[in-house]
Image (cartoon, rainbow, N blue to C red; front, side, top):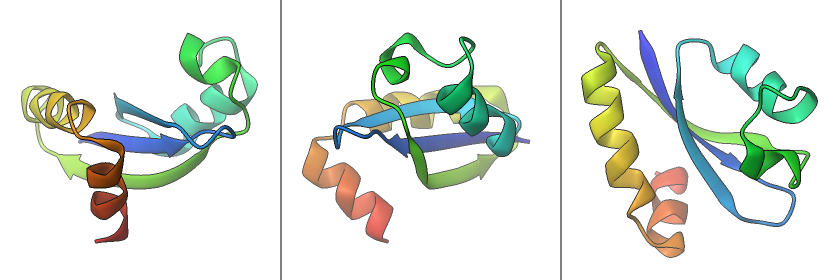
Length: 80
């Protein structure tokens, strides 16, 4: 199972990614150098959205779609 996730960073920005383990990946973003370079300077981050996908291909397509959304569209996605 793959998950597409959105993190809210301490500066209010959003980060979108893919993982097979949400807890581990969120912890890495907050505590480890394994977290994305983008989130390392914007800690702490919090998980605000995720969706499961059965294949990496499906998850990658959704990640790409979400990354193209405007900030307001991402907020709507989170709130639904």
